[in-house]
Length: 267
Image 1: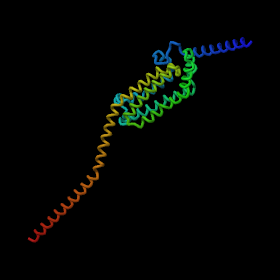
Image 2: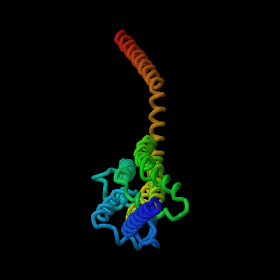
Image 3: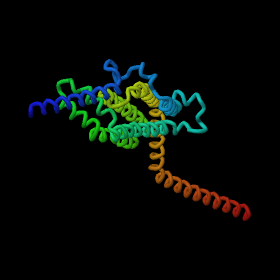
Image 4: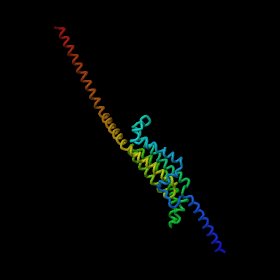
């Protein structure tokens, strides 16, 4: 009796697990498909994210030094502020990318499909623990890191800001690719990310030489003004002495003239 009951329970559990696995697997991409960068998945990008993503790349390209000099941005962004504006936008986008991961973590996106994909690997327990961390606490921590990094990067000089933010965008792209390889992101997202993030990194780095030259010129101007201010007391004292000497000389000449006129009248 117990044996038959155990067999029934095992059979029911096996059928339920098989049904769950097949339903999740049917919602997942084919086994031969990868979540990493595959151009053929680009056609799966929904129209709205595609349009908004491409529009979001416009400020990066328009504010890039080689481009902004030729499209007449002087009335909107004077040359002195373009690199800083580009860095500020890069920091905002880096924070936004972290926010998308917070949303994925909150929704638990991809955790079930990723678990099914790893069950047959022979390391189910270890994979499940790793995925639970990636889809939960670890992903929340990863989600807030870009914002903190971007905030710290904006404390640097502008050329260093651009370099640091380009590096941050690249690092987040690599982290997202790792999560995508675990099935924790939509497979259409990474082709879009590679295109947009690649555009952002190239545009940001292209502004570094011009920003460095402007920073160097500003630093030299600050040094020159500082030297002038340090010399100002000495210059002021020398001017007062010169004014005093001039007044004394003028007085002596006036006295000599008056003496000469008096002598001429006596004669």
